[in-house]
Image (tube, rainbow, N blue to C red; front, side, top):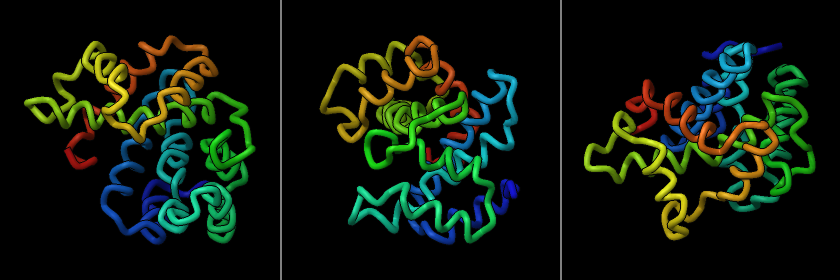
Length: 188
């Protein structure tokens, strides 16, 4: 089954209690929906994948190598389609999973999972504390500062943009656009 958005949020909240993790899931959901529309794909499917991608995050924080390995059990138990499970596993490719992204949805998830964190952090340090006035050049400036958002793996984002066959600047610009309408929902 493909869960509804409401069912997916319930599943995420069942296994993740920290508000920041829920905000991240919603950020990735909205970026995925945005890119689905660019690719003429299903925003509902892509959005659910975005919501569920870190379902096992809080269960695996002490053993990060298990991230993306517990998720399939949780999702199968809930009756979630294998297509969604495969996508969830693929976002950890090369880090904690050997499941390589094999389609546009999976390549997008792999790329924007890290990128949403960088963009949100860049927005939070602006005087406005908003994405409304955040532009590509500001994100690119922060990108170069390795001390800024240190936990964001820029190499994964670059590799993902290449896999998406989209210039990195376009991926960043589109992700900013995707997050602007939901900045209040993601804790900004």
